[in-house]
Structures are given as C-alpha cells and as structure tokens.
Length: 71
Image (cartoon, rainbow, N blue to C red; front, side, top):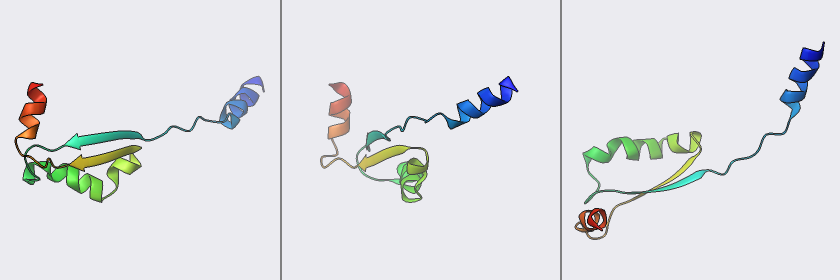
C-alpha cells in the first residue's frame, strides 16, 4: 500500500517547465546540399519536437566562417 501511495505521489508532483534551448547554426559559405539534413529537420519541425529552437544562418560574407574559426 505504501508503494502505491508513493508511486501516485510521484506521478502527481509538478514537473518543471523547461525553456527550449536556443541554437544558432552558422552555415559554411552558402546553403548547399551538405546542409540538407539541417534544413529538412527545421522545415519538418523536428527541432521543435526535440525542444530546440534552431536558427540556420547563411553568412553574408562567404569568407566569414573561416575567419570566425581562426579567431
């Protein structure tokens, strides 16, 4: 009986709401077929289902990613 009451008490405990993790992905050079998995996952809402808020960013300057990595 004690086990059942403990089990029910645990089930009724309020769970903490967790904010979605926000991620920004800087694509290399320009959007190309290498990024297909990321683009498709974003369009199909797979990131949201996993609790992630993902922003895919193509750099305005194609030479920016190598410079950012080198920094």
